[in-house]
Image (cartoon, rainbow over all chains, first blue to last red):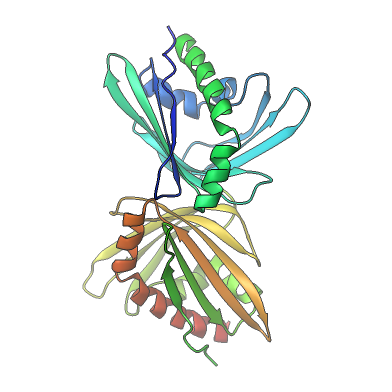
Length: 159
Length: 159
């Protein structure tokens, strides 16, 4: 059974942060695996209908990741970052860069046990400035994240 | 000849950032080398009178660094982070964690050519929150940075 869509994305007032929460019908261990196994990650990260190519994925302190989303029209969107700290069932931190746009964000994802096999994913993304944060929110990120997490529901239900 | 001490540290109002500028009597290439050669880095980074041990230093995208400052009384202060992007004469970006304190900052250092063999170092450090930023500023960071950059003057004059 999929989770009801509980996605909330907030541009936290008085900060340059975006906070995002989403509940999943899965354990913290399952969420950790879906974020650190490149084959699982490629199955859910990105908007519907996009090709996803993971070119680097080293989920440990000092490791890097890189991937490209390719739209049905053939447009490419590249992303890269590095992991700070080793991922665990508590969560992980990473840098996040959308290639072609200025600025790098620092993200911390945490997995919180809600009991009953459910987990709250909380992500805090720190932008370089309020303006960069607002541009991220207004870029339509919510649509891609909502579709990604709907796919993650499916991955979690079958993995 | 050392630079006059032009250090300025600013908690930028309306942000969770610290901006720091300092001029040096050196080229961008010299500043890049002093920040990416671990032997040179160990000579200047840290307060006066502290031992400095660099245990990891991989100045490239996805590389990590770690070092420990040891006070004359034997107290140890550990730091670690990862590099995002490859350092160049334009500067570099990295995460920065003071072990034992919560939160990770994301720092971007840029080297700006002032002409006449002088360079402006500009560092922007993005804290997880305004409170974390203010705690960093009030921790006495300015003293250690001022002493570090005075030592960097010496390293640049002799390297």
